[in-house]
Length: 241
Image (tube, rainbow, N blue to C red):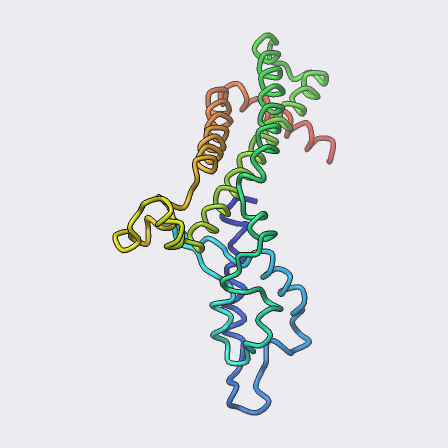
């Protein structure tokens, strides 16, 4: 699953519910919030887990804002779906890149060690289609896949962190504390330029560096890895057949 695929379906759900919901002024019209055809409890958990999702570039949406447009939506039950302007600390924790950075750093060190070791062996070993070499190729393939997964996870974490910043711009009080005139501060500056502390910027830059590091190593060794991965996949296909 790519970062784009992760949010694609979540982003579509409130729009689908909005389209499916009937006219509240018409008796017995379809109520998407009460019908047994929809597992509302499961959707509510999903909305609370991902209340803010990316759209494209620096654009983000709040799911409950879209859902609130549905005719049968009840404002007094908003807490079941997650609040549009919540600053809940546990939710902020889930969107925070800083909270995930240490795990990414450790995973990156482990991956670099595994990949460097595998690449070194490949460079010293003549390519062969013998069973022993095919088994080693499978191990190399798993290391490469682990690199892709780590890049994906870090990319998703950066995206989610950015979405939180886009939907929670810095307030006037914090701007004043930083000797910045709120009246001259544009909206984009509030969500980007002045919305990251120095530690947060350091974590963001380091995470991007790790993504670039893995990508560069995979691209640099693409010619060597391609036949190895093809052999691994061929060997696995033969076993499954």
